[in-house]
Length: 161
Image (tube, rainbow, N blue to C red; front, side, top):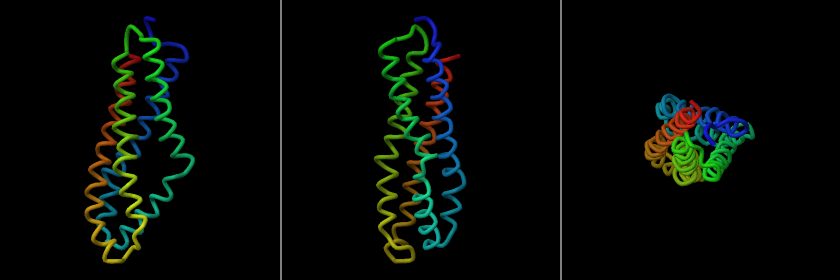
């Protein structure tokens, strides 16, 4: 196979779009949402983030976030099977970046922090004590997810150009 074309091309374009959309969501959190929440009194910040975490698990976002992970896994498998003459490295790199750097980090770093926050009652000393550590750690890992998702989109784009 000399070129990425047909359904493989469509899958790759969808990979660019999906990983790019996720990068945009994460970028928004890294650049202004978390800063805004951190500027609130801890009780308000905790309550707002708890509400955001509940609202985030909607079909619309989950289709993009989890759907992109499935798409990246499919692209990796198809790339291993077809092993195109061009774009192989970029396709495999894009898949790895998203699957490990975005989806994997979400599961291993951000979700456990969200679950710990969800167990706390806003305004309690425990929630206040956890909040400052939460904001810093969650945001740091979110930066990783942002960069990995954006890099995956760029990598997929390079594969088809």
